[in-house]
Amino acid sequence: MALPRRGDGQGTAGRPRDRAQSNRQSQKGAKRSLLCEASGIPIGLATAGANRNDHKLLTQTLASIPIPRPEPTAERPQGLCLDKGYDYPGVREQAEELGFTVHLRSRGEEAAAKRADPDWRARRWVVERSHAWLNRNRGLLIRWSKKPENHRALHHLAFGILAWKRVLAADLSG
Image (cartoon, rainbow, N blue to C red):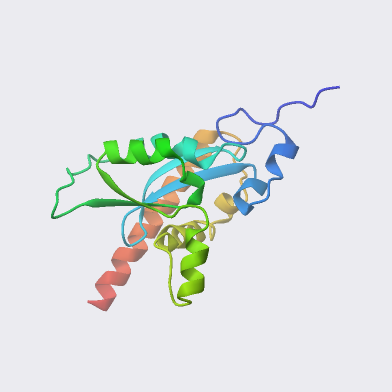
């Protein structure tokens, strides 16, 4: 007897065993690929089932930017910091075609840098912090939404709240 598919392939993993992967995002059945600006405010999002590889979400994530990107120049290059889940030749080529300066540590480089300098911090911590901010919302941490569009709407609401809090914090400090 075959197991019934629980997901639609667009927002959740299809079978329970597909959701029980080793990383935390995969245990919930959904994966989000987040694009942030330098201070950690999310500006792009792609969601998929947890059984989808990270590097396959790059095109969707970059296409989800809601406003036109300014052209990168020599004086103002645009960096794209990625983790080792994106360490594939096609990813580097695609990012460079779009005008990004890629900051991607190959597998094992981050561990070597950490051993050489214990105070060293990865550039990706900004995105990890944004994921932590989003996980403060119970509806995003534990996916209650069955429809992908409802889950995406909750993400966008959380993005707006994060941006609003950052503006309020900037007004109070300055």
